[in-house]
Amino acid sequence: MVTALAALVAAPLATAAAMYGQRGANRATRESNAVTGFDSLTGRLEARLEKAEAKEAAAEVRAATAELEIARLRLLVQQLGGTP
Image 1: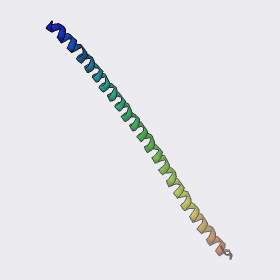
Image 2 (image 1 turned 120 degrees about the vertical axis):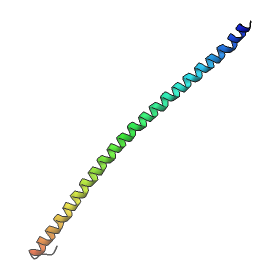
Image 3 (image 1 turned 45 degrees about the vertical axis):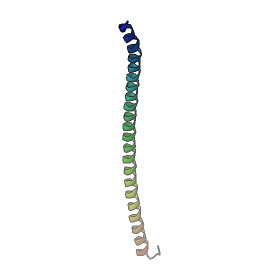
Image 4 (image 1 turned 60 degrees about the horizontal axis):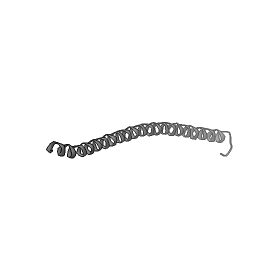
């Protein structure tokens, strides 16, 4: 009879432990997926940032080149007797 009572008490405890263990495993899987997704997103954002910075640097070079060309043309106009 003691064995039967022990079995009746142990069965729900074992079920509860299994459910709790499964919840922990599910939570760990979700957290792992979240971390992996975050790492992927971070990598993509860093790549976009580097690409944007490269485009910005190229635009700055083009702007500087245009300013030099404007200065050269103004000087040429002055040398030819005109007013820039």
